[in-house]
Each structure stands twice: as structure tokens, then as C-alpha cells.
Image 1: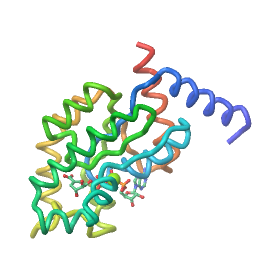
Image 2: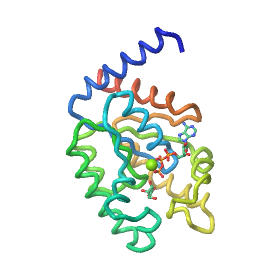
Image 3: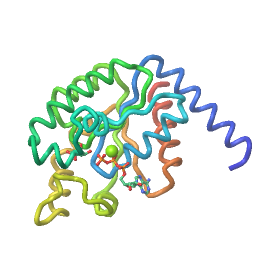
Image 4: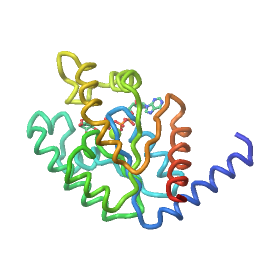
Length: 192
Ligand SMILES: Nc1ncnc2c1ncn2[C@@H]1O[C@H](COP(=O)(O)OP(=O)(O)OP(=O)(O)O)[C@@H](O)[C@H]1O
Ligand SMILES: O=C(O)C1=C[C@@H](O)[C@@H](O)[C@H](O)C1
Ligand SMILES: [Mg+2]
């Protein structure tokens, strides 16, 4: 990347940090969309703290997500997710990566919509399936046909994710490039 491209990239990140003011930036979307990996880079570029709701829940429960699902069940996980997101959104100067189901929950979605700029990281089923297949840490996909389960989740959830303020395609390009796409789309959204 040339010096002027790098300078332009820094300038856009600074401009977005200013325009966001005291609003958290929240990434939503399916498991494997890249919310955690892209979110970390985004926070770094914006000079903000990065938080991940899945990690916060694991810390609070002293258990991994698969253990929480197995020992407490999904409803308890969702209740914990809402609590954690309400708590971390009090801190405005953050980038928050949410778990894949967080925005689908009515109460959690209302919390995010009320105070944050929400960004849907969207990817198609082939990309998501390839990415989530790398690690067996998604309890919702522990079914006889994980691909069909993923497609059902996509069909159910995409109309809901579409309620986010902005949609950005999570392409199979370096994470930095997806982070740049988020910055550009957010700047565009906040200008209009
Ligand atoms: N743009 C990308 N190109 C290639 N691989 C990617 C990209 N974004 C994410 N990945 C890979 O996909 C996998 C899942 O990404 P990540 O954990 O960030 O997703 P997530 O949206 O946080 O999922 P979850 O909802 O389960 O937490 C990781 O191995 C990550 O490196
Ligand atoms: O899509 C989902 O509902 C989930 C995604 C993960 O981030 C975790 O929050 C958990 O595995 C549930
Ligand atoms: Mg994640």
C-alpha cells in the first residue's frame, strides 16, 4: 500500500471515530461472518476498545460456550447474552462483536438499536460453512446435517439481520480489507 493510501485509510478511520461520537459500533451476523476477527481490527483502527459478547459471557460464567449450552441450555445462554450486552453497551467507546444469535433476540436487538451503530457482516452459506467447519465450537451446528441447519438459520435470521443500520459483505479477502469496507460504509451512512 502506498504512503498516500495509508494516510487516506488513517484519515477515514479518524473521521469515523469522530462521527460516531459516543456511539458503540456493533457487529451482528451469522457465526463465521468474521465479527470477532474483523471487529478486532476495526477497533484497532478506530482507537477503540474491542469487546466480544461470547468472550464476556464465557468470562462471566467461567465456562466455554459449548459447556454453557450443554450444562445450562440455550435459554439461559440467551438471558446471559442480553445481560452482558446491556452491560458492555454502557461503555460507548467500543467496537462490540456479538454472538450470532444476539441480534435475533428481541430484547438484545432493542438494546443495540437504541444506542449503537449496527453493522451486519453478511456472507453466503458456502463461505460461512467453510469457515465454521474449521472448528467444532458451535453448539447449534451439532446436528446430523450441519449444512442444512446453517441454511435454516440463514433463512430465519437474514430478514432480522437486515434491520441493522448497515450491511457489509464479508468477502473472502484479508480481514483488513473487510474492516476498510465497514469504515467506508459507516462513514457513508453517517454522512447521509
Ligand atoms: N474475510 C475473511 N476471509 C477469510 N476468512 C475469514 C474472514 N473473516 C473471518 N474468517 C475466518 O472465519 C472464521 C470465523 O470467523 P470469526 O470467528 O471472526 O466469526 P464470528 O462472526 O465471530 O463467528 P461467531 O458468531 O461464531 O463468533 C475464523 O477462522 C476467521 O479467521
Ligand atoms: O449463532 C448463534 O446462535 C451462536 C453463535 C455464536 O457466536 C455463539 O454465541 C453461540 O454458539 C450461538
Ligand atoms: Mg465471534
